[in-house]
Length: 62
Image 1: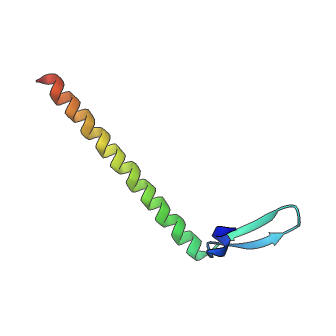
Image 2: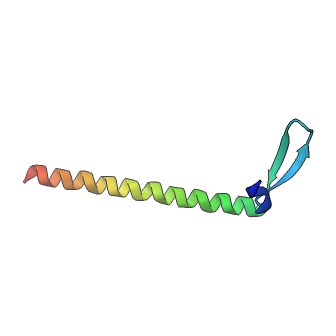
Image 3: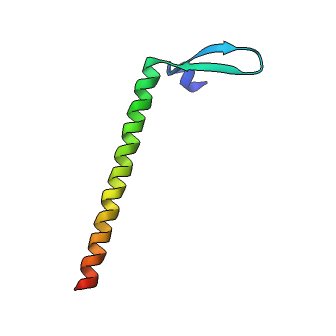
């Protein structure tokens, strides 16, 4: 498993049928970083959409 090899999670229990994993500190940091990236992406999209709405309002009133 790639994320396990990367050190983002560790195997905590393997009962043969299922495996349980624990997120490592490095995994928590990577998760927070990815979350921040996605929030910034969404915020940029909101700003762009608002800009589009403002532009369409300006052209309609001219």
